[in-house]
Amino acid sequence: MLPVLALVGRPNVGKSTLFNRLTRTRDALVADQPGVTRDRHYGFASYDGQRYIVVDTGGIGQDDEDIDSQALAQTRAALEEADVVLFVVDSRQGLMGGDEMIAEQLRRIDRPVHVVVNKSEGQVGATAVAEFHALAFGDPWAVSAIHGDRISILLAHVFEHLPAPRAQVLPHQRGAIRLALLGRPNAGKSTLVNRLLGETRMLTQDAPGTTRDAVASEFSFDDKPYVIVDTAGIRRRARIDDDVEKVSVVKAMQAMEAAQVVIVMLDAASGLSAQDIRLLNMAVERGRAVVIAVNKWDGLEGKQREKLHAELVKRIGAFDYLPLLFISALHGSGLRDLMDAIQASHKAAFAELSTNALSRTLEDAVDGHSPPAIHGRRIKLRYAHQGGRNPPTIVIHGNQTQRVSDEYKRYLMRRFREKFDLFGTPIHLVFKNSD
Ligand code: GDP
Ligand code: GDP
View 1 (spheres, rainbow, N blue to C red):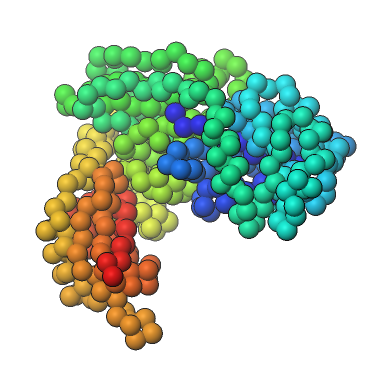
View 2 (cartoon, rainbow, N blue to C red):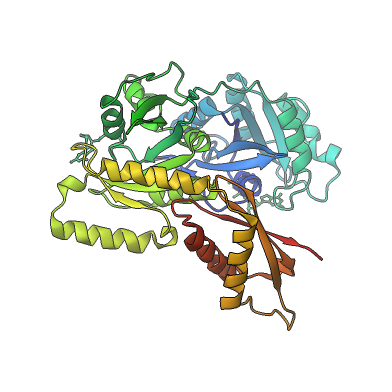
């Protein structure tokens, strides 16, 4: 399981700036909680090869006097899932009443807390942090989220003091394809899992754990073994306790991390939501093979089906290499096609690509359409080899490769995808200069 790092602090201290710096991405998953003043954002990050999850807890301490109870409840929910807390304060403003109130909340939880004194650029570290010793969470760390100053020293310290990692619940059956099933509440995830499990002997189900843990089940389909991490399982349990957040984004991300193939389930009855797009983006950015399953296909008439199909194809155009399947989890239709697509995507994600074939494909691609010269200087792409699998990583050697345009990269990706049948998985291209 990936460690979860939560950013907590008053508004405007720089939490989202720090979040963006740590995750280096615009894509964030948003907790699905209506009526809160500010959304929680979740993203993947890595430090020194160690991957982790960052949560920007959003609203707490709306103004100094009044931390509204809902904001507090939502921050508490985020802290529940966190392994470590970065308590962000503002060196320009100094220590505020709201900081002290947050500190009081943080003292009640049993997690390491590090005080991060942001906006400290241009200040002497010791002066910037002096007054924040009063918060009594050890030595405060002066950083500048905007300039990136001292962030890596902070992270080195945080990771040195990380609590012992949580156990991975996922069973490891040899040769099993590991699946994560993600999608909005009520899309039909539980129904699909029940159907897949129901038809075969159930080996394990609902392994004991807390709401923070993944729930994994094993099943086989056509005599092929699978492990499915089921984000709906938690919800089944959560119904017992209404305080528990309905769908944990952290859990979805942990499942995504552990999986080889991610099934993103859409609900034909309600179409494609912004969160569905974020899920797709994140899964692809994480390098996972992905299949898109549009569920509740049974409820639509012919005309509606056509319309929805056309709309989906249009709106998820950027993911045109991902299989789009139409199923009914309730009636069991389309499951074979879904499982076939999963097999094919998995195969593509783990494909072995020979240096010869890759280099030849590169050569053909360049012959067909050479990279445009930049300021009269020609970009040369010489040869390619495989740098990794899951996702397929293709390393291209040449000169001036830092000048290859995004458009040309997309062109190359398309050529590799077609040549090696790499559908259902993202491809990573890595460029190396040989001069
Ligand atoms: P949040 O409400 O805690 O998420 O705060 P934001 O990340 O939105 O930042 C609030 C403001 O502080 C923005 O105008 C940021 O540009 C600014 N800010 C964030 N980090 C720094 C920093 O390191 N130095 C300075 N000078 N400004 C910063
Ligand atoms: P989850 O929240 O994603 O786990 O969704 P559930 O599996 O609990 O399903 C939510 C609701 O959608 C339930 O009432 C299901 O019976 C219904 N449902 C699930 N799959 C289908 C389907 O393929 N067709 C129809 N018409 N309803 C479905």
